[in-house]
Amino acid sequence: MVAPNGARRGKSDHAALPITSRELAATAAECHRLGAHRLHMHVRDQDGCHSLDAGLYREALAAVGAAAPGMGIQITTESAGIFDVAAQLACLESLRPAAASVSVREMARDRDLARRAYAVAAEAGTEVQHILYTPDCVAQLTRWYQDGTVPEDMRDAILVLGQYASGLEARPDMLPAFLTEIAPLELNWTLCAFGGAEHACLLAAIEAGGQVRIGFENSLGAQGAPPWGDNAASVAAFIEAAAARGHRLAPLDTDLRASS
Image (cartoon, rainbow, N blue to C red; front, side, top):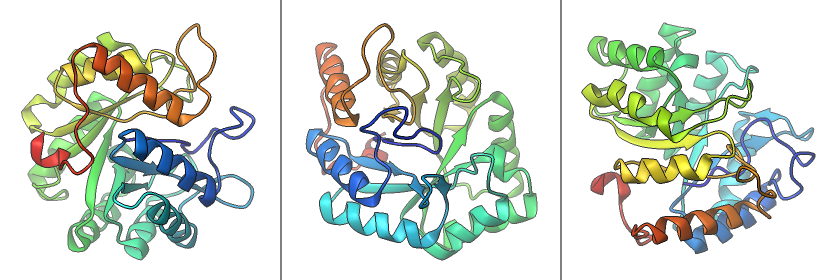
């Protein structure tokens, strides 16, 4: 999965960071051509700020769908310190997307609305990927499986190493403890990693049996090296590094969830 923009970075951070629907579509097409199966989508308003507006999402979904047919698209419900749970729920209710990332930590701000959000996703057939930042997130998800807040079959998660806001850099040696934490839940897990060691962390994830998410949301370049020219350059370099370790890219028509 490629995450080409995120909620916080802009053109001042990297001129090739996609903001508009047209730019997202072009990025998606190039990364899909290289072998990225899915796009993690953030949309921005007219001022370039993070948005959960359903209309903006529909425009971007249509643009990416036309430019990269066959590429899966996952929207985000991330609050980014702007939106409350009611706004996140409204986004899911309005769009009823094929796939969405949902932060357990953010949903826990309002348990009643969280229960409704997960129920809406279940009714719509939305593939929910739980965002897990810390052991507290894992513990919260565990409780929610036990009390029925989260349906038992919603077992996809993305583990987050490092932090954008604090500047905490991800390291590969952070992964084993996280995997120990989630082991009892038997999750289908993906990894993303903030900072210059992104590629090294993702290689560790592959070797541990996980899927990976890569892109400018998490890192603009490798440690001690110039920034990638664009998201596609990062994707291409990572695929090359993985191949050098003997890993083979799955064909684009592979159902990665079924094979994980």
